[in-house]
Length: 155
Image 1 (cartoon, rainbow, N blue to C red):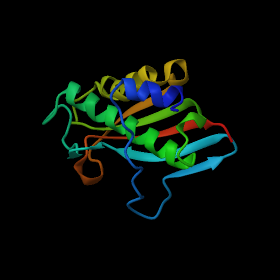
Image 2 (image 1 turned 90 degrees about the vertical axis):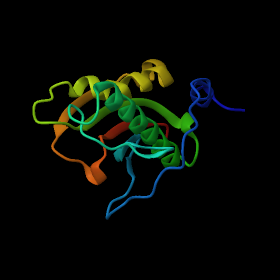
Image 3 (image 1 turned 180 degrees about the vertical axis):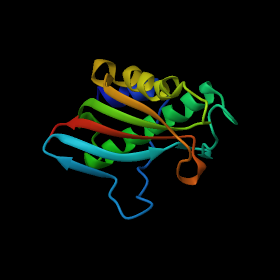
Image 4 (image 1 turned 180 degrees about the horizontal axis):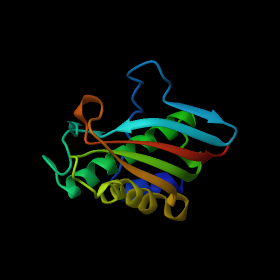
C-alpha cells in the first residue's frame, strides 16, 4: 500500500522516473547522518532534454515547467538513495537553482518557482525550503534549468 508521499504524487499524476546515473566523476547523492545532498538534476523529462535559454528561446512559463521536471528528478534521486522508499523523506531543506538565461533576464526566481511550487504541492509543509535562484550563461547539454537539493531523511 502506498504511503502518503506516493499517494500524493499519484494524485498529481506524477510517476517518479528511475534515477539517472551520474554523467561524470561524481555520485548522485551523499548522505551525512539524516541529511541527503543530491547532485544537480537537469531538466530532462519523459520526452528528453528540455533545452533552451530563458529570456531568449524560452518563456518564464516554459522555464518553470523545466524546473518542475528538475524537482521530479530530485525526488527520484531521493527515492533511490532511500533504497526505493520515498516515505523516508522528512523534508526539503534547500534548493539551488541554475537558470540558463539571457544576460538581461532577471526573473530567475519565477523560473525556479516551478520546482518550489511542485515540491510544496507534492509534500505540503515538508516541501517548503530555503532557496537560491541564479542565472547561468550556459548549462550542461544546453538544458534550461539545473537544480541541486538538500533533504532530511529518516536514517
